[in-house]
Length: 327
Ligand SMILES: Nc1nc2c(ncn2[C@@H]2O[C@H](COP(=O)(O)OP(=O)(O)OP(=O)(O)O)[C@@H](O)[C@H]2O)c(=O)[nH]1
Ligand SMILES: [Mg+2]
Ligand SMILES: [Zn+2]
Image 1 (tube, rainbow, N blue to C red):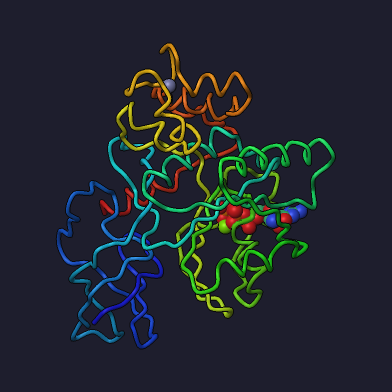
Image 2 (image 1 turned 90 degrees about the vertical axis):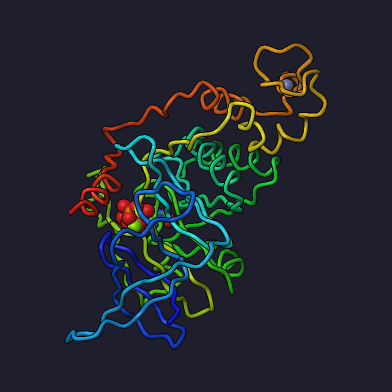
């Protein structure tokens, strides 16, 4: 039988069959994916084959095969530096939720996310949330960020999940698609899902918990069927985005506005750093490329890990997934 993985808790997978029934499944023995070294063999969004288990009171299943993925998105694990964690697979779009404040989302974080999504061929739409809370200075900052990303070609939306602003436009894009919400903890991913489908009652951070940063309210990625014909994957907040291993020369290819200029650089292996007659640096001088993007690029090029604000984001989600998998 074939089904779609809606949730993964480390040892159990919730699979929805083609007939629409949900079933708890496990995997048997070692289940290794060809070519991918990941901490989780199966992710939400995977299409799998499974057999029904016999001799059990509740109906459970065993996953026997995973179908080829159309795409998937990964991040580097925090404590196993060479391992990857597959966040989700078979996606049409990813929505990256951004808040200017509470919590702050930096351009460095956004750019790291976008580089990864570009590398894995997944279209990302930037969703600025909590616009109801912005004062003039925050609004300026938000509009400036939006300008930068729109210039490059990324679609940007402005929403308020609590006041229902901008939601209809988002729903239009989501119709008939499988999409994923990502972003820091507390940006309002689950609140936004609830705004689109109030009957889901997903757990969100309460007012009294709001000052307690660092705790994840959503702890597992999970897919939901929405009544307007969309499938959404709500995910736990991420602290920072470790860039998966990439060749230095490869990185600028995932900055679309740099990539366009590449052919005009004097050297065809130009890293756009210290080389003479570099079209990217010339564009930077002319303000045609944003400094924040260029800075993010240099940081990734230098292999710097993002400097996390550990006081705000305490991301132990993947670490605990790995611990569970070992048990
Ligand atoms: N004012 C305002 N508050 C919002 C908005 N969206 C979400 N919030 C609040 O922000 C807090 C965090 O929202 P969640 O939906 O729990 O955030 P999350 O991104 O799902 O967080 P994790 O599950 O931890 O990753 C909640 O208290 C929400 O009520 C918004 O548009 N405006
Ligand atoms: Mg959540
Ligand atoms: Zn160059």
